[in-house]
Amino acid sequence: MMNKTKMVPFPSHAIVPERDVDKMPVLDARNLGMDFGGLVAVDDFSLLIGRTEIAGLIGPNGAGKTTVFNLLTNVYHPTRGAILLDGVSTEGKSTAQVNAMGIARTFQNIRLFSDMSVLDNVKVGLHNHIHERFLSAVTHAFGYTKAEKKANTRALELLDVFHMADHAFALAGSLPYGAQRRLEIVRALATEPKILLLDEPAAGMNPSETLELMNNIRKIRDEFQIAVLLIEHDMNLVMNICEGICVLNYGKIIAKGTAEQIKHNPVVIEAYLGNKGE
Amino acid sequence: MKSNKARRKNYITYAIAVGAFAVTMILIFTGNASRHMQSMLVPICINIILAVSLNLVVGILGELSLGHAGFMSVGAYAGCLFSIYMEQMLPAVIRFPLAMLAGGLVAAVFGIIVGIPVLRLKGDYLAIVTLAFGEIIRSIIINLNFTGGAAGLKNTPQDATFISAFVVVLLTLIVVLNLISSKQGRAIMSLRDNAIAAESCGIHIGYYKLMAFVVAAFFAGVAGVIYGHNYSILTAGTFDYNKSIEILVIVVLGGMGSIRGSMIAAIVMTVLPEALRFLSDYRMLIYAVILIVIMLCSASQTVLKLKEQLKAVFFGQKNGKEEI
Image (cartoon, rainbow over all chains, first blue to last red; front, side, top):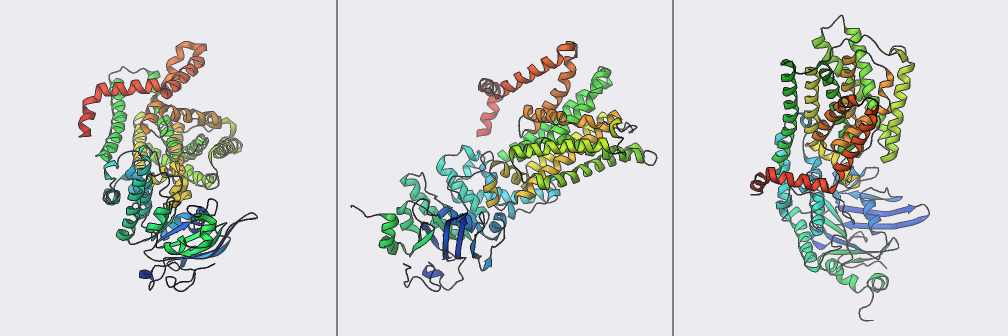
């Protein structure tokens, strides 16, 4: 079932695009497995992601896609297997520590700090890059002003990438739906990740918003030089921007490859895509 | 800029506090303040410190703690014992601040001891465990010898004055308001809004929960020390769960997360029971009815709309300018 093509160098579970081939992969998941009681939610999940690759994770509902994200961010600790980020194992680390190591994510159901301003949401993302100690926080002296100024400038810069600087002082919860999704991405980017995990970023968006999102995802890769792994049901988006695609069904990988390969893979068509016009 | 607006809001809070202090001092010096009124000043300050610090846990961190009186009592006993032993050695000017520091630190240590296991719990469970903590502290204090047991701790020097208490109020406001608009404060608020997302942003949940809890415990302890040095006698019964609930009522009345609200509500809630004394037997009944009415009004849409309209009438033009 595994696709072995020229696109896929050593080892065989890689979906690294050609331009990243000579570099060490940013994310290396090896034979991940997760059991909930007797239920095997994910099994033998192996994936390599290149340093600046845009990769897609697709599959039917309940296939275990979000579980994979939760495993990669150590929200669940994998029952089996290992995750290497830049060659360093994330085993035993907390979600916060994994984020500091370089994995940031967004959520399927938007999770913003809705009672805080847009700017403050981004500044929470910048948390580990703001140098303020408790003493300076309490006194607003000893480097507080400098640190806050730097954080404000950086947060506004990041918001500006997505044309959201105008709404910096609005409450995050009051933003329209599309803007909330964008803000979640900005917040994740603020943590300065090496890889960004997007959980259904286009859910609930209209075609023009989806188009904008596609451009934004490419922009993120090009400007920040990071990898993106996304879960998405919008095949138009996935097939257009993902350089490597991994298909999950019943917790197992059933296919890997480029968009062209996946589109014509009979196993994927059977399990997920379906036949057109039949 | 709106970030300046947040800062201006803080300045308004300080201004209200200093203004109220100035008016009171003028009343005292011109001889217009009765003895009865003057006796309420320190308790008002104590309640402000308690409410503002509890608001840090309930409003900013978003966890319901019912053990605030427990921390208050730990601080009160530590501070008062310190003063009693040091009475001959140190003058009041040095003794009282040191006693407050000692009481605050002991309460903070208890905050860490209690906080580490308790903050793993959530919501109702956390509330009940903190309530139990308060009661445990109370029964331990009653059964110890050096705390004076059930008879209470007597002979604490009466060092607390309105001025010193007000200075502590101001310090509490500065620390809490500064903390809120800092990296640490944002981390604490992000836990309240969405703990899962906060963790995925690299925020260590346990650390920041504990930070809010311990800072609140510290100030509760300091408030306890002032309490002990105001009445000169401490009995463990004072710090039962009724006291915790009383502080919580102030916080809820002033608005969760609103420090200025807590301050104003603390003043109202300390003065109100005294002001209703003329009703003699019906006092507590009327007091309860007033509470219910205030709570209903503060949650009512009609009143909120009215408030907005009033704001527009008074500050309409000013707001308009800000937009540009």
